[in-house]
Length: 167
Image (tube, rainbow, N blue to C red):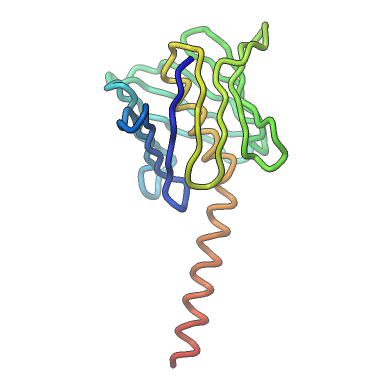
């Protein structure tokens, strides 16, 4: 079993993945676009999301070849993952969204377990498909983006209040 850790910035739009204390990957949102750039163990990927309520995300390798698709439900509480004709599923397993996992389609065998809250967490993997590690964090971002926008709006409101009191 592979044990990894991850960290994120406060807006959950940039992740770093570590094995022991060495960074082995990252996932980073491109500003003002529905695009993420990612890398793990030297392999680069691009995630491009399309749609609004019922979103899909296409995954491209470093040669711009489509290698996978994520199909999100409306509230992004779970997603179907299709990579090179293999199907897996991503889902939250705790009501506070602090634990989530990726499972095989038919056997429901758990391939990856994630645990974390806001800025850091852990990953346990029994699969050799490193792209799935990135997908688990990507879906965590997608499901929490509304919370991210709320935090940003609240931060701006606090700054405006502080400026109002100073003037």
